[in-house]
Length: 321
Image (cartoon, helix red, strand yellow):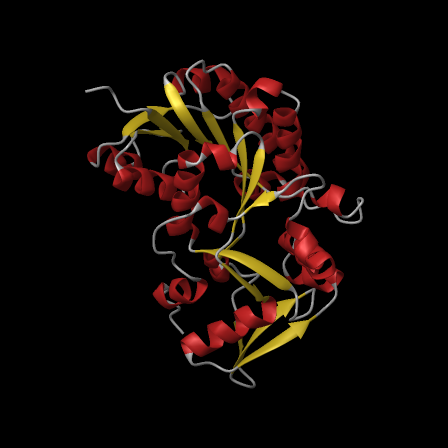
C-alpha cells in the first residue's frame, strides 16, 4: 500500500489548526502532521495519542520550518497577530506577523514535495478603501500575500483562505454584552451602527477544517492563486446582539459611540477592532473582495460536513449570567 500523502498543519493546537487536524483525521486520506512550538504540551500530547505526528518548529526560525515541512504534500499555514499585539502593540505585532508569514511561505517554497499551500489570511483593507482604513491585524497578512503573489512558483500552489468572524469573539470584552445594573439590560457598545454587516464562519474550531479539506480535494477549483471566502452565515452587529439576547433570555440594548470613545473604553483593542467595524459598515459587501479576483465560495467547493452556526456556538458557551 502506498503511503498516504502528508498534510503539515501549522498551529495544530490552536483554533483554526485544530479544526484542520480534526477534519483530516476523520477523513483518513492523509497522514496528519501537527506543527507546534511546544511538542510536550498537554494539547500536543493529546493529538499524538490520536495518531498525529507532532513536530516542533518556531515560526521565527525558517530552518525549523523547512525541516518540519519535509515530505509534505499540503501545508496549512496560519499566524497569530494577537499574541504579540497584547505584549507590544499593533505596529510591532504586524511586523512580527509579516516576518513569520514570510518564513512560512519561504519554507513552503523550499519543500519539493509540496502540491498545495493553504494560507489563512484576510482581505486587503488598504487597497479596498484606498488607504482610508488601515487595520493592523489585516495589514501584516496582506504583505505576506504580496510576498506569495510575487513568487510565481509558490503562487501556483497557493490558495488564500479568508476566515470570517469567529462566534467565539462573543466572549471577548469588545463583543460580549455587558450588564447595566440600573436597567437590568445588557448593552453592546460599538463604533458603527447595528446595521453593520458581519460575515461569520460560526464556530471556527469546527468549521475551518471542512473548508480546508474541500480546498485540498478540489485543486481544479481552488488553484492557482485563488481566494476562498469561508463564511456560513451573514448577519449584522445588531443581529448578533439580538441573537445573544434570545439565546440567553436577556433584554439587550445596542449603543453606538464614536471611535475615540470606543478606544477609551477598550484601550488599544478599541482602535484595532473599531476600524475593522467601521470598514465593514462603510464598505459592506466590498469588504470581502479583491480587485481582479473571483472569490470562491463554499458552495463552489462543495464543502461537506455539518457546520456549527453562531447560534449553536453561543448556546454552547457557559455565560454564567
